[in-house]
Amino acid sequence: MSNRGWQTHWQKHPGVRSGEQLTLGERAADRMRSIMGSWPFVFSFFAVMILWAVANSLFYLGGKNGRHGFDPYPYILLNLFLSMLAGVQAAALLIAAKRSDAVASEIAMHTERNTEEIKGLVRDNTALTAQVKANTDLLQEIHRHVTALSPAAGTAEADPMR
Image 1 (tube, rainbow, N blue to C red):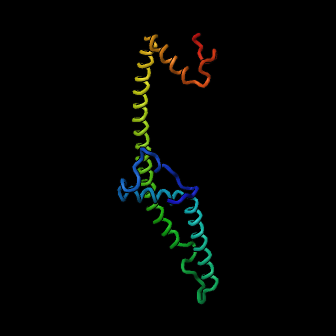
Image 2: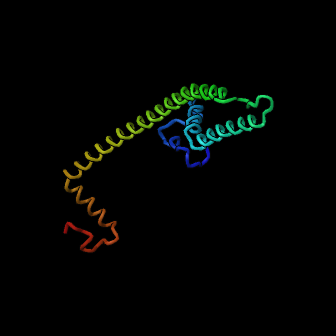
Image 3: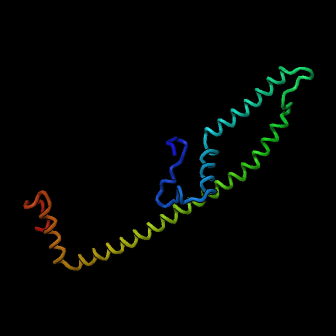
């Protein structure tokens, strides 16, 4: 995927399936969301609308015997195309929203798993800390070991227990 500023990077999240893990429909929904939800798409759409109006007006002005363009005012053919586009786009946006919900769900599940794992590690650390505090001999041995490794070993500042 290219590094355009208008694209998102959720697919790099470790908890979100991507690439070959996705179905064809999921890949299509991701691509559609990336394209239709972008400024280049909006500007391209406006460009097509303007080109339609300009081309139709030029045909109207250059027409002979009745002077009409390929889509006479009030642009009936253009209205038909826009209505069809709106119908298809509504379904496309629902598909893209459904895929966004799936991505958000995958991220939430990943976060929950990580949170539970971290809670377990904190419980283990708390239990070990309680054991160390309960055993003052072990605490003093750890302190001596840490102070022996410090750069200021042997100085009064290195051993606050003196």
